[in-house]
Image (cartoon, rainbow, N blue to C red; front, top):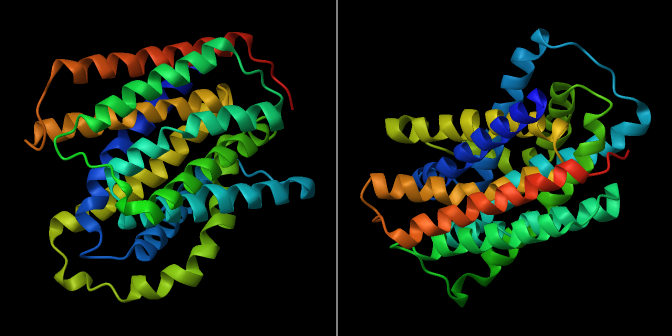
Length: 299
């Protein structure tokens, strides 16, 4: 029970950080960096931090038969996830991204059933639907919400990210039973960072850091440390003790965080239907967590 509580706490904090991340990214792109450069800074910044603290954790060797799985997880969860979302936002908008990413739990539930043989329970389906409705109402109620057909390419890219990030969560789950959480995360970043070099290194070196305001430095630091290094670490801890669908359904908390920030800085206003939509989100998360009690633990 204590591990489950710790897992839910870790996932909750990770999604609070993800919610703030939408605001931070807006301070960086596209004026001070390209999406390729930001993907490079996120990946290698987090990898450096992971390697720096690795002596504190026990060293584990990865079995040859698992190297391919970790490599695939790295490409999906680091290279593709960190690139597609930022790329999609640059061609679309954070509002569109928030709405489309609420589909992620649905894909995770499907992949978990196919790959991990987890059951699709009534609680799970109902929780995803209720939480998703609450998240979409909250997002669309924002003062600056716009959702039309003018960002089709960006929306498709974000949808691909939602699907592939779901695959990452499911592929990673069995590895958590064989290895320490930190081991999985470290090797995931080792494999996942290097594809970003091919399209992210040159744009990064072209950034004019000398003329960058301090608030942009702070935003980059948060994106790298808070929204990448800490979120991946917290999610991987959560994934060790709960199923991938539960981890993914916490994504519904992100628009709540973004909404609270928008209200606090005067970009949005409080309303009772916002409070109602937040209540739907929490009900949805609770219903999905109930399915853990009956979830088979396979592989």
